[in-house]
Length: 575
Image 1 (cartoon, rainbow, N blue to C red):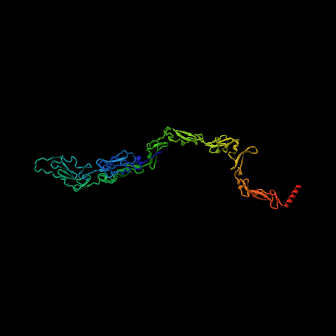
Image 2: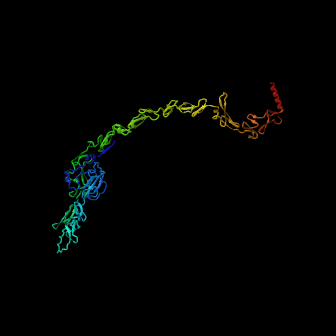
Image 3: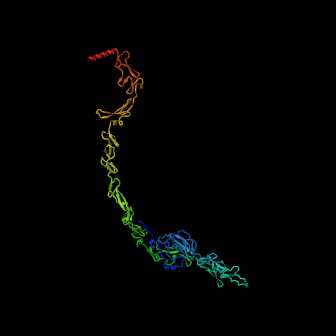
């Protein structure tokens, strides 16, 4: 919503803050002798200065000033000083120029002043004519062929050598004529001047007449002194020149109305109603009601006016746009008045998607002023009411299904290889080859052969696998350790400790690929009872010790033990 604040001075011209009016002609007649008052509206706002210095010269530009009054015309009220004209340049800036025969007076605030008011304000070879210094010796100042010499601001005409005549009229070349004592020219009563300081001397009937020049006063026979002022620019800025005296213009009786305030600005009296008052400051001021700022409303059509801090604030009514000072308008009356991605709603171009044009979880798109509602990928439902996902996790589906891309599907579809069986357990596909088939179930299954019993090798490390059968006749792999290896063929096979007795120590022999004592095994001595065992060439040699007899592989005994053994055998036979 665009809000514009108008100051009191802009709205009413003569309201709460400052008020300025054109002086009535009756009042102007009272102060017309005050030099420097232009016949224009007397400004109540502060003088605005661009900071540019004056440009010297008659009828020259004094300076440029940026207007801050907010009135629209930078020259009303005029920001220029006395003896100036105000115009607006192409950039909307007030441009001040000196009037003809006036020159800048210091700066843009002081305005312009006459170039001169008497001859004494000009160089010796110049004189003051119509407030402008002009050369004394100009074409036509003397007669034909005459010489002109400037003295004391006056032209002295003489005929050059060899010429004669009236130098003010014409000088002619001398002819060889003999004259007797030509008459002497009459004396100039003003040369030298008999007048006092600052006085002017003029010849009249052969006599010198002394007068004080314009803007000077006193006895011309003794001394002429300058008056206090001729233009207001010669006075302080809070005074004006009246009857050649600097006075406060606010002291002029009835210059302002009852209850008004008078201030001097740039030598000019400014009448205004103070803060909180309004009215005609040249007649009377009354207390101001702030609500008057909006009565009548200074705003444009379709706007609201409210008063804030003694200012009128203009704003567009709801759903209207524009400059509230000029008038507000509806942004749209139909969708065609809006861009393609907007629609018209309550006379405003809005994004319809911000007003729930589509259903929950749906996508909203506006093209060519039309709304298109769609459900996101893998969602289902009506996009104008609600879009939803069938699942977000496996537990949202039955145990024989799985959640994939927000939908419940059969996880076995495409999960297993060719010829494989698939079943679902806890939402996961389980692939296996059917009975009588083998292979990689995630790639392919094929009919089973005996060669498949050992491919891959199901036996332990280093063991050999050969197809075989169990006791029931079923085909089974048979695992064995290679010759020379030992170990559990279902676990691993390792190379044996020895392959022959020579691989063992002298008292050892090689048994089941292990080096062990040749005379002893896990069950005891390899020789008979009481027999001695010695090792020869890794082989056990059994013998009965001395005094013993018998079979050393079975037992050795003495004669006594032999009878006892025979009796024992006899008793055992009878029994």
